[in-house]
Image (cartoon, rainbow, N blue to C red; front, side, top):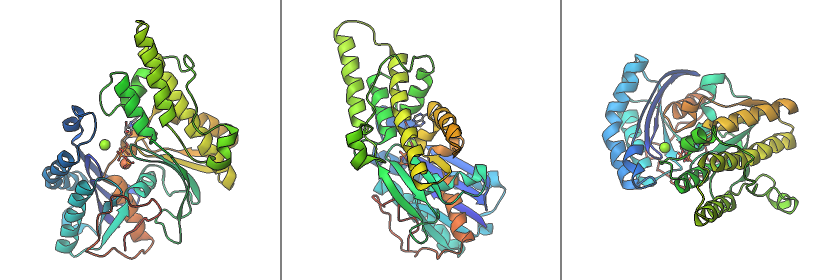
Length: 348
Ligand code: ATP
Ligand code: MG
Ligand code: FE
């Protein structure tokens, strides 16, 4: 099926067009630069930027894909989770298209889309697999038996009890004077640093924590430890070794993520691990996951960095899977749901 997907959950207006598992276009307009001076995404600014970018981004995607709107078989749209006002813009546009074109509408989950997108690069998703979703707002370990969510197809094994992994990257970057969003900057700066220079804490890995939180994450203690370390340095008048702090922090995050993800796969007897979400773009996370998984005989799939951060292709990919598996389209009065749980994959 030819599917057009719309993503507006945060600050990226993404329009993707796929034919089955083949990516035809992935047009993204980001308002990230408008938010940078505030050090975080400003919801009202994001909503307005989506409104302005929507039509030109749809046109750009159609042009790249070489398709006309009336040829599309279905529309899919992120209807949650995310910023309420931002989601509404995408949902309204999707309804208008579906109604105007007389095509079915699929309201899908943003987080499940971060998993489904890998099919565009590496082919049919191995099901069941364990998926680790690490992004600006979420850090979860999921057991995915059916990415469309059919029959409890997505089950949560664990998630962060405080900050998300991407949030930790962004906060530490700020502390180090790096621009927003900080993840890619920490990644870049860490390449020049020593990852064992500072021994930062690995949250929820002590034996007593593993009893209750084996597959959960905690990054707020790590963030505080980095802040304390930097403060102590500054007070002593010595320069802060930014590259070493970045590398040591990044190592602490990636070590815990990879350890828990592989443990989750092993505990389920599953040989396929998928990593998705913006933090999956991190070069150290990718390398560490691959090397440790190999020794355990676990296969790792990570989409290329451009497909890890928010985009429309991921929404189109999940929409195409809904069509291919004969799922019932969503109602034309589907709501935006800012706190949609990851297990709710398709709107009724
Ligand atoms: P969610 O999917 O939870 O709604 P989101 O939509 O804000 O979150 P994504 O685009 O999925 O965001 O991820 C953005 C996050 O990924 C930001 O926190 C950003 O710093 C982080 N990130 C992007 N690239 C890298 C990288 N190379 N290393 C580490 N973090 C990264
Ligand atoms: Mg973003
Ligand atoms: Fe996202």
